Amino acid sequence: MTTRVLVPSGVLGLGFDRKALARGVAMSPDIICIDGGSTDSGPFSLGAGQSKYSRAATKSEWRTLMQARAQAGVPLVIGTAGTCGTDSTVDWMYDITVELARELGQELRIARLYSSQPAARVAEALAAGRVTPLPPAPEIALDDLTNIVALAGAEQIQAALATGADIVIAGRTTDTATIAALPLSRGDAAGGVWHGAKITECGALCSTNPTSGVIMVDFDDTGFTVEPLAEGARCTPHSVSAHMLYENSDPFRLFEPGGYLDVTGARYTALDDRRVRVEGSAWVPGSYTVKLEGARIAGYQTTILAILRNAHYAQNAQAWVDRLTGFLQAEIRTRMELSPEAYGLEFRLIGVNGALGALENRTGDPVEVGVLGIITAKTQAEAAEIGKLINPFVLHYPLTDDEELPTFAFPYSPATTDRGALYEFALNHVMALDDPMSAFRIETSDIRAEVTA
Amino acid sequence: MTLGDLVLKVRSKNAGPFWVTIDIFCDRPEVFQRLSGDLSTERVAELYQVSPDQLKRFDIADLRVIKFSLPRPVIQGSAADRDMHGAQYAALLEELTFD
Image 1 (cartoon, rainbow over the protein chains, first blue to last red):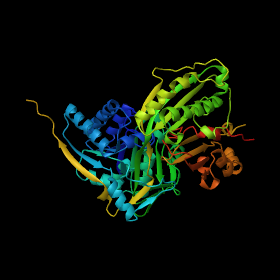
Image 2: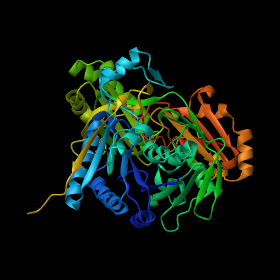
Image 3: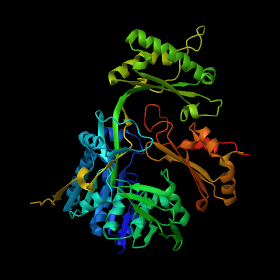
Image 4: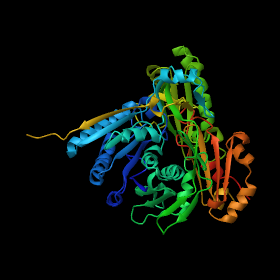
């Protein structure tokens, strides 16, 4: 059976070509799937359980997709809702959906798939030898994690679709799971399904026009066909096969709950100048494991930014921060009774080695140097206090004792900025499950159109 | 001459929070052949200050791509991280002298 999946873009919140979406709806897809997040932007979203995209951008795009769903008369699925896919961001997305349903007068069944994991469940699995580290995994410690999620696969999305939902709002899933779920349940070839899902999960990134977003993928019993829907966008065997490289440490294997995809034998053929046919990908079944992600608070930060424009200071920026750091550590010890081990104080030189640090191997003659001071302390109050303490010295500290006090450029007042919590990723592990649903739960709600008297 | 002068593009990106992956798009088959032979894994490992056995290497002739994946020198988003998306790591390889 052929299953046609419409993918509006790589992620909700980044925009898509609305004309291309309308073209996709007119082609009668069986389902519309979009991803809502990833770990790309760092640990904050998962740590705090918040979306990184604005509510306004999310709502405006989701409105268009809810209208497309109503027109197509097929389910609409979002995976990893709200960037990190915690229960809190699933509920955030659900609120937006209910609000839009009322505004659009839509009657809907909504299924929410929850992926958050109580620490006790993971601890129990760990004790039973059912949690395995993936290299390079951090030391596992579960007590202080603010959020843990498990990445759902196709089975949990299938269970959510089986409720008869018009819209599925899924918590953390693998990037491919929402796209793979329906074709797998209809018996399309598993190798082709997972491969096609991986190729299209970033939307039009597998085409010659990456920002256009909208992609259609047809699955069947021997493989898949991918087609970009924006005017002038093309998929070529090269653009499609090269997508397996993207954000993938191994371009031939992709692990999913219940096995892995092997694309070593995949053949990519141009059907015409826009569409590519792929066959020969293999699915290798294995034990049923789900990947875990977790984050914890690793301190609280305050930052300060000064710009050295004076040529002498710009040329000697590293010597300046080395001398300044020694002086400040002594001041902080004296005035706050804090030893340097009790907090972090780091100055990064923007214009010298700001992005690469110790890996940088080029030197130059910068016009100016941005000195970004980052303080990490046990509480925000302590970080802020250290920031205030060092502020006048970051502004005026001299390179040598026998010179007039310099004054550098602070771009704003106050010069310090409290950043809040610093979160860190704390898990790179998989957890074995006997029943795919044992670590996930589904709730359904029926939204009725409001009757106006 | 640098490696960047020879090839179409060098791209780096996180592959999850714990890995970074670097793709060299050689474009021309003769450039792929040359780099495949002359660009040693040891030299790339040295550039990123990891031991060569930590580097995964893929020479993909069909795509004229050489791909390296390595455990991130610092975990994404940790206090010591300077590049959240890992996209600037590519610059080191792009600027590698290649005669």
